[in-house]
Amino acid sequence: MITDINQLDVGKSYTYADYLKWQFDERVELIKGKLFKMSPALARKHQKIAGFFFGEIYSFLRQKRCEVYSAPFDVRLTPRKSDQTTKIYTVVQPDICVICDPVKLDNRGCIGAPDWIIEILSPGNSQTEMKNKFEVYQENGVKEYWLADPTNEIVFVYVLNDEGTYIGLHPFTLEDTISSYVFPDFTLQVADIFKD
Image 1 (cartoon, helix red, strand yellow):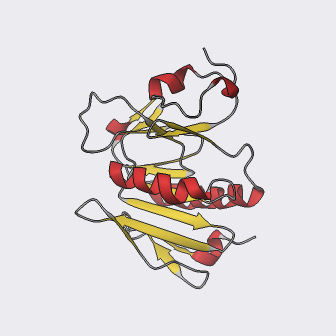
Image 2 (cartoon, helix red, strand yellow; image 1 turned 180 degrees about the vertical axis):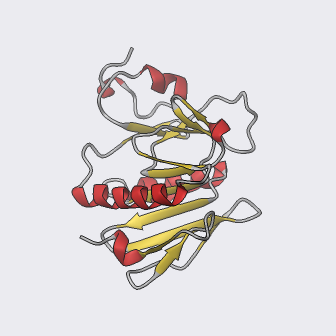
């Protein structure tokens, strides 16, 4: 049993089975078997933005079959092209995720791609969100991926096309209204997302 994160070798590859055995307080994610430490305490602005997204989406989904979850919430991913017996090497905790297929939900979280993921950039994790998570969400078939950048007050939106590749829409700035691809009736004013 691993009780201290320092017992782990960051150069080693881990699986979800390993992840379940860890008994330490630090929050971590696995992306393609590699260990990523999460920020120890999120800034107030980050939390406020996450709360805003969650509240707006929760209200929108009240009479729908889809459900919204916020971190910490484990999402276990295996690439779409792999067979179902493949070991799980990716466990992420998106800031916000929406799942419309109840079969993907269990007592440990979600197994399979959520329909929509929103990540909020923090100074310490921008590289993870921008590159590694982009790739893993695309490979696993997350239909829509939003990246909210509090520093520059911009939201980047990526939508999966028929070939399984993300298409980036123009960056949404404070003057814009943004809507979801998965839920076209869901709209937000970008200025409201970043309001202090």
